[in-house]
Image 1 (tube, rainbow, N blue to C red):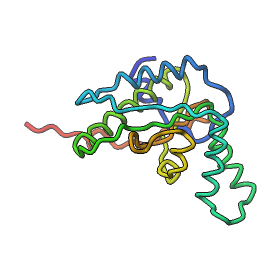
Image 2: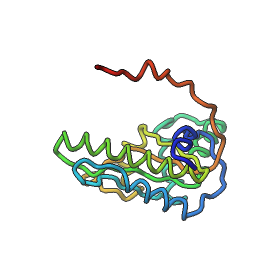
Image 3: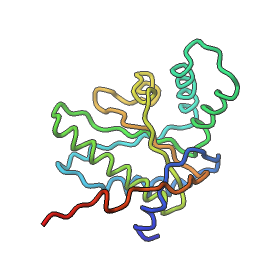
Amino acid sequence: MEIADAITKRRTLHIFSKKRVPREVIKKSIFAANQAPCHRRTFPWRFTNIGIKKRKQLYQLQLTLKFGDMTIDESSMKKIRDKMLNPSHLLIATQLCTDNQVQKLEDYAACACAIQNLSLSLVADDVGCKWSTGKITKDPNTYKIAQINSSEEEIIGFIWIGYGTEPPLIKRPLMSTIYRERG
């Protein structure tokens, strides 16, 4: 697939099937992520592949975070269960911690580039993904479940990977509204 086609075809999937993505495709996407530009050569990205046992723990945590002690209807439980357990893979994307605020910002940009490379590699293999954040990605229990040391790495998102329903194309701004030339 041409890079321009991959860029145009890449979309955030929200509904995933249970079909498994081959391990080689995942590894290829991680390799692509690792080729991202990185201003200070800090290579701050890390990806932790979370298995189904730990995903079930994250599912329980998500229910607690979202509903607390409230009674949960079956429809809401199914929606969260499908979101947490249907995608073939869950990668937790993290960024190495630093006290240098300029470097932290540059490192986040590098991590975003790595995630975009990963996404484009996946779409080239007809696999979809979704980069998501939220309360669960900041919760200390997520760090425990994933065995990620929060003093060394910060979770910057979950990357859900799999096959599923491709959303419609997005109406994007006209080029004339986002690009300027100055003489």
